Image 1: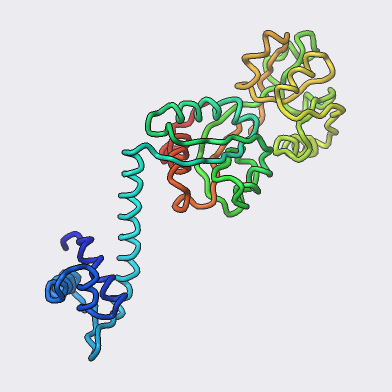
Image 2: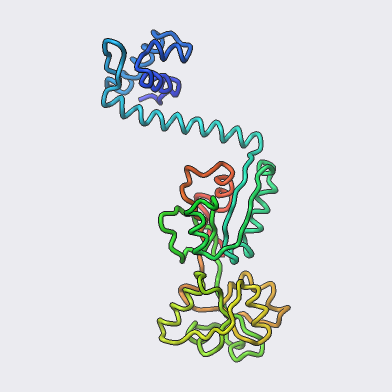
Length: 303
């Protein structure tokens, strides 16, 4: 079977919409006999009647109705391809709002977005980044407040679609003179006898740590709560507690603050981040371009 011709499919749709070959030809500036010939060839190619000739026009057969649905989809996709490629050639324009967790934002996302915006085809795109905790990210994307969200995959995404983005690794940060500072690695249970500098109560990290503590039937001591990991490092440096933080974020500041990072040996210590969205097919072009930059179809996982 030869590939289907888009022009013929476009004429077939026009005939079905008007119910009349002559009127369809007038709209397309093609004589009716030329359309009839194309449609006859299409029926021969597909091996089934597509139109039922009536006294005052034509109606699609059952097979014709099926083809009509597919044809509309193909023509819509062809139009989108043309539009998107034209936008690429001209330099795409648009605005993309992204909600992201503080870990993703500080570790990789800000730098990735900066590289995206520096590329010549993206110079007319504006990306707005806003820090949120993971449950708020999911809710914001679901409610249409942002096109894309970047969050830890430990949070429930519900009906949202997603693509893998990056990974990081949790560790325990302690002052250099702390009793745990000499350890080469730690289980989470070994930290529960010490005061913790805690993340916000509604964050995915807080929920995870509370759950991990309850599984070993130990309390999580946390008299200091902070809004982000950078503040947690500053508080730990004063000696008020220890904290569980991403190694990738803490490494650059640990030495200057006199801190020691101890690997956390737990299955959940490697966190996987995703880019989430409502429906990839309905994303605006600028958002789809950013999605492809952040989370390609076949991503290479980075540690």
